[in-house]
Image (tube, rainbow, N blue to C red; front, side, top):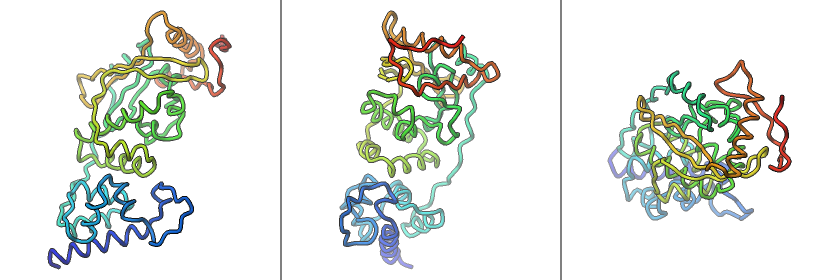
Length: 307
C-alpha cells in the first residue's frame, strides 16, 4: 500500500471509529438535538483531542500527516484498543513508543516515619500525582485514603471526580486548573509514561473543565500556595501548603498543610488533630483512623473528641 493510499485508509479508519461513538460515550452533552451524522462530529473529536477542527479535518481527509502525540491522543479519544492503536500508527507511518511500565514507587521507611512524626497534615506524592503515603491528620483533613483503591488514590483524579476531597475545596475553581498545570509538568518529565497518558485521556473525556485547561498548555511546578477548605467537622480552614522534594527520589514530594499561628484555622486544625489522636486505631498507625465526619458540624458546635 502506497503512502497516499495509507493516508486515505487512515482517514476512513478515523471516520469509522468516530461513527462508532456517541457523545454520551465520551462525556459530551447531547441536549436532545437531532444529529445528521452517526457518531461524533469532527468538531467534537477535535475538541476532545485539543486540536483545531482544521487540523483534524486535514488528517481525516488524508491531506496531513499527524504527529505522534496527536495520533496517541486520538487513539485515547476514540477508545481504540491496542490492535486498533497499532493499526492507526502503522497507517500513519509512525512507530509506536514502547509502553514501558515504570517501576512501582516505594516510600522509604525513614520517610514514612518522618510523615507520621509531623504534627501537620502531609502526604507523599509520586509520579502522575499518585498518593503514595499519608499521615492520619491528612486522611482526616482531606479524605480517608485507606478506603480508596490504588487507582483512585491519585490527586488529579480525586480533584476531577465526585470525591470527598473535591467537595471540601471551597476554591475548587483555582485548585483544579493549578492541578492540571502540575500534571502537564509531569507529562513533560515523563512523556512516555503510559499510565500518565491513560490518566490524561480519562480525565479529558470525563471532564470538560479538564479538557479546556489541558488545551491551554499552562504549566507550573508544585512549590507553595494557599487552599481554602470546608471540613464537615471543624468548618472553614485557610491553609498554606508547601512541597518538599525527597532527596532519594526526585519523583517523590512531601506536601504539608499548615495554618498561620493564632488564627481560627490553626485552632480548627488543632481540634482536628486532637480528634484524630483520640480516635486513632493503634493497630493501623500508618494510615490512621477511619473517622465519620460526614455530618456538617459548625465550628461553634463541634463535637467533643472521644475519650
